[in-house]
Length: 65
Image (cartoon, rainbow, N blue to C red):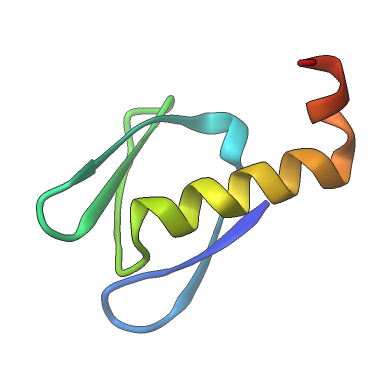
């Protein structure tokens, strides 16, 4: 799970394997495979870095080389 910050300032945890897409409008909207959308303060670059770090931590990045 990765942490993101909702617009109201609360921390929210997302399973990065469930992210279907992200769109900046200007806030970042994350669309999940379930159809749910979450609007957050974090930038897309920050979320991508968190996803990469998470995948390295659990060892998935080694399988993708």
